[in-house]
Length: 84
Image (cartoon, rainbow, N blue to C red; front, side, top):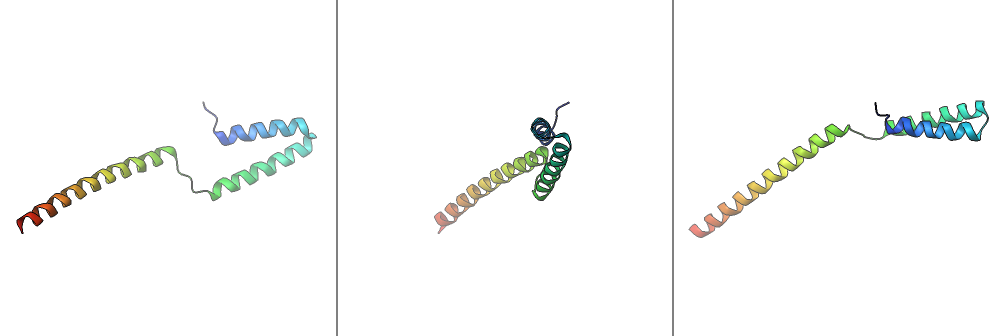
């Protein structure tokens, strides 16, 4: 099972804190860092990768449809101008 990047980051930070600070202070600072990181991530507008990819696919489809419609419109305008 793959560890999410947030957990991996916290583990590495806590490891450094455990080595650099006394145990009680390291745990206190670690909890504070974790709390602040969670709050910062909650304030971001993040979406899961599969939702992003679905929206990206939809956008590409819609752009292709717009391109097709623009070509058809240009052809109709040319035909209309030729009829005059």
